[in-house]
Image (cartoon, rainbow, N blue to C red; front, side):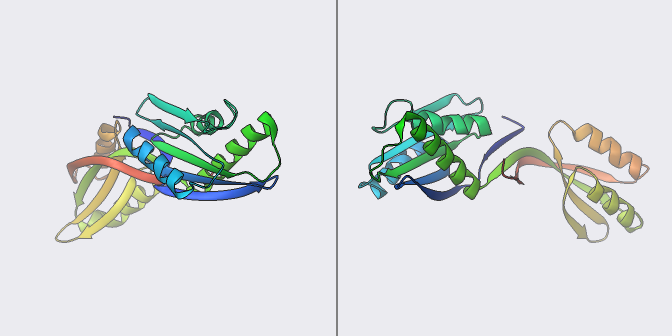
Length: 213
């Protein structure tokens, strides 16, 4: 299980017109090749009247599943450029379909490659990218006298402060990157002079928005 990786936010689309041809890009996060194929078939059905519905997807922790389909465009001018954008952006578990309605002007091999790649980038940027980080949850219980100091330090740190619970004691709900648990506990112990109860919770993925690349 990867500790962190990039993927797209669920599902989205965008489009552009190039030399009178309409290119529509669809993006979806997928968890399996079967899911990717279902998405592609759904888009083909939606645009059954289109000239082409080209596609690519990259799935798996180590990108072990990679497929590209030109759907009638000259070999290597559509599916591969779409896939290359996924590789360049390091997007895992992502499927793309680019639908083209031919406008009467031939683009040539170079023009097609640029058109499919740029539409892919446009659709990804519109959908949004997230970094999924595997993080351990910690519950840090302290006396109210340490509330101000600990809250201030946590907000200025790289740790993710999710919530503060105010009961008999104060409990901070904090997320810590996998691999940094020991240093976090040592940091808390030092900050509170050992006057904190640190309880480990479950680990799960947290999604953080990534600025457009």
